[in-house]
Amino acid sequence: MIDRHLTRLRARHPVSAAEEQAIRDLFTDTRAVRARATLVREDERLTHSLLLLDGLACRYRHLKDGSRHAVELSVPGDFTDLHGFSLKRLDHSISAISDVTVAVAPHERLRALTEEHPRLTRLYWFSTNLDAAIHRERAVSLAGRDAVARTGALFLEMGERLRVVGLANAAGYDLPMTQVDLGECLGLTPVHVNRVLRSLREEGLMRFQRGRVELLDPARLRAAADWDGGYLYLEPAREPI
Amino acid sequence: MIDRHLTRLRARHPVSAAEEQAIRDLFTDTRAVRARATLVREDERLTHSLLLLDGLACRYRHLKDGSRHAVELSVPGDFTDLHGFSLKRLDHSISAISDVTVAVAPHERLRALTEEHPRLTRLYWFSTNLDAAIHRERAVSLAGRDAVARTGALFLEMGERLRVVGLANAAGYDLPMTQVDLGECLGLTPVHVNRVLRSLREEGLMRFQRGRVELLDPARLRAAADWDGGYLYLEPAREPI
DNA sequence: CGTCAGGTTGACGCGGGTCAAAATGAGTGG
DNA sequence: CCACTCATTTTGACCCGCGTCAACCTGACG
Image (cartoon, rainbow over all chains, first blue to last red; front, side, top):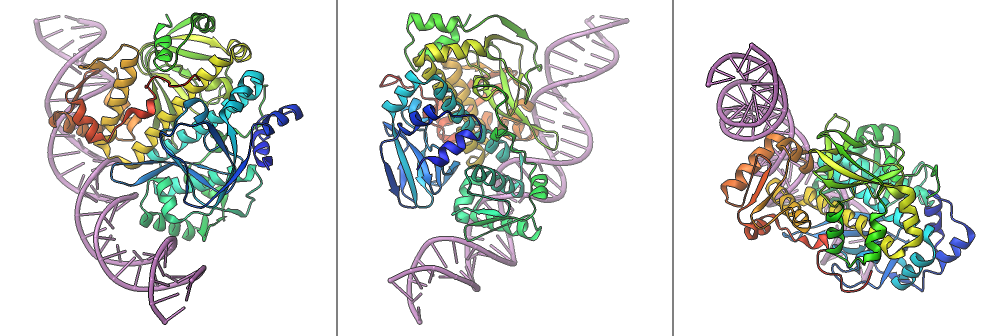
C-alpha cells in the first residue's frame, strides 16, 4: 500500500527493514476522496498528516480576486502535508485534483517516531526540505522563465517525480489535469496555457492531451526550459543522513 | 550572541533553560563576512550550517541568461542554511547582502541534537517548514500579485520578521539593499522597481530610501498588497510541538 | 440530440521589460 | 575644498508577452 512511498524514500536514502516497519506503523487507515474535494482546509487544526497513495493532489492559496494559485503538486508516494506535523495548521488548502486515496498518519505517531527514531526523523525532515526546494524552483520559474519555459519545466519535473515511483517512463506519463489546473500551477490564464501547449507541440518538444503527457524530445525540452533537476536531489546520497 | 535566534524561536515556541544551553552548544565559532561575498556555493558539500547574527543574506539561483533570482532573504536570528543539514548540498547559493556575521553550527553537532533532543529537533524542523511557507508566499506573490502589491508584501514581511527580533518598530526599519537587490527578490527589473517605489511613495503607503524603510500607512499597505502574515506563524503555539 | 465542461482561436490592451540618458551621491585623491 | 569616479537612482520612449474578452469547437454523457 505505501510501497510507492518507500520507493520514493529509497531513491534518496537507504531504509532498513526495521525502519520500514516503523514507517508502516505510522498509518492507521486509508481514505478514498473524490476529485476536486478538499483534503485539508487552510488554518484548520491538524491532528494527522496524509500520505498520497494514488491520484494527484495540490496545495493552493486563494488570492483576493477569488482566483487561486497552486503552490505544489503531490504525486503518489508524497506526503501532502507532512509539514502540518510541526506547523499544526497550514497556510494553504489541499485539494484532490483527480480521485485520490490517502493514508492517515496521526501526529501522535509521528511524534513518537521523532522520539524513538532520530534517523527516520532526519529522513522526513529531508523530505519537507525537498518540498521547499521544489517551491524554490517554482519561484525561480515564475520570476525568470517565460510561459513556454515554465510550462516545459513543470512537465519535466512531474516526469522525474513520477518516474521515481514507477508512474512515468521515457515515452511519457498520465497527468489527470485540465488546462485550468495547469494555469493555476503556472501563474497563467487557461487561454495562455492553451497557446503555450500548442507552441510546445508545434516545436515537437512535448504534447499534452486528455491527461497524457508525451515527452517527444526531452533533451531539447530541457534546453528550452533551462531545466536541471538537481533540486530534486535524486543522486544517491554520498554520506549517511 | 545568539540572543536574536532565541528570541525568534521563543516568538513561536517556549524554549527551556536546558534547551537554550543545548542550542548554545551547537555553535563553535563566529565569522565576519563582507557584503557581496558568497557564504555558501551551490552544490558544495556541506559540513556545517550558518546562523545569521547580523546583517542581511540571501539565497539565490542563477538563470541561463546570467541573471539571478533571490528566493529568500535571511534576517538576524535566522539560519541561512539549516536545510543544508539534511540536504548536504544546496540547490542555490547564499551570499551576504550587507556585511554580516554568522555563527557556525557543525553538522555533527546538529546530528547529535537530533539524537538527544527530539523536541528541539521538531522545533528546528518547524523552522525549515517556516522557510518553506515563506517560499510559498513568494510563489503566490509572483504568480498572482502585480509589481506594486508584490513589493508592498515583501516590505511588510520583512517588517514583521525584523520586528520579531527587535530590528523594526512601527515607524520602519533599516534594510541595506539596493533597488537591484530588490529586483532580484521580486522578479522585476531595477528600472521597474524604481517606478514601483515611486508609486508607493506617491500613494503615501511607504517609502524606501537609502536603505531605510518607512511604513507610512501599514493598514492601507496591507490592503493594497492583499497581505496577511498568517504564513509567518507568529501566533503563540496553542499546543506543544 | 441537448447539455456542459473543457479546449481552441482571434482581436486587442496593458503591465512591465528594454534601451538610452541623465541626475544624484558616496567615496577618493589632489 | 574641489575634481573625478563609479554605483545607484531616476525618468522617458518604445515594445512585447501575456491577460482579457468573446466566440466557437469538441467530445463525453444522459
